Length: 73
Image 1 (cartoon, helix red, strand yellow):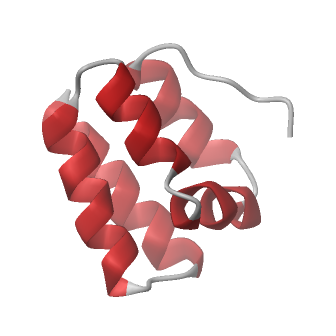
Image 2 (cartoon, rainbow, N blue to C red; image 1 turned 60 degrees about the horizontal axis):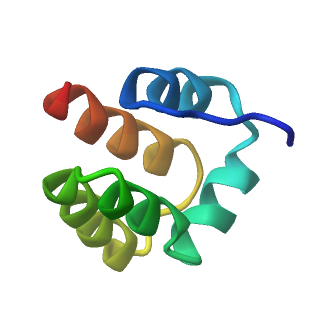
């Protein structure tokens, strides 16, 4: 999709606009969790792990992830 984030603020902004299929793809490959742990945001990585394990899809998934990011900002 060509969109990147280098911090949580950018990540949140990208999440709000990117195609939901991209979010699903990267969430279920655990890409978000790996990146968050790499940049030292382990609590948010754990939040996304729980969301991933819930098996959500579509706009509800986007909403849950955005809410989790907003709580950590």
